[in-house]
Length: 192
Image (cartoon, rainbow, N blue to C red; front, side):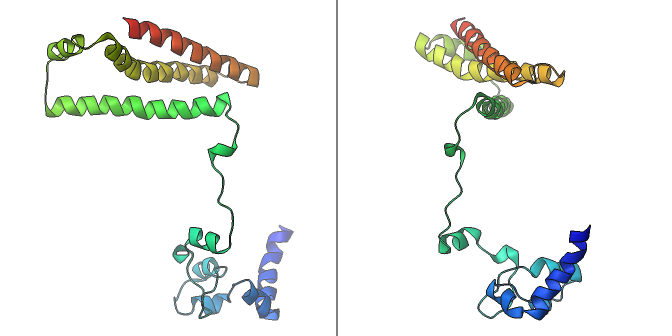
């Protein structure tokens, strides 16, 4: 509480006693920054720490191009997933989300296709039966692997919801179990 009560004083001291310090950091006085905008006191605080443009007036934060500014200041670009060592936990979590989108997307696409142009399942079965084994196997695999993985990983999450296997060892055991069961069940279903 003591720190919060001293912040307004520190802000006033920065702007009134030494305006050159504020100007050197590109900070303009709240009154000068907001005089043209006719903003409320709360909105003035939002604009009080924005960088100054050439005319010395503050510019709203939304008008600042952060990427352009970072390039001008020669700041490094923030790294992405490529800097992290792949771990079972975050890879399976990401794959669970990707398979959810894939399975849901295929389901809705199939439903919309059937609604627009109804077709009989007998004609689809006859068309699939005429395909070579390798094409049928790959087609089944494209549907079965994401569906089985997402289903089994969903069961894994339900186990976690029952506050079971939440230790690091338990998380890895259930993860490897889901991977092994996905490969086994999917291969069996693809060979049918």
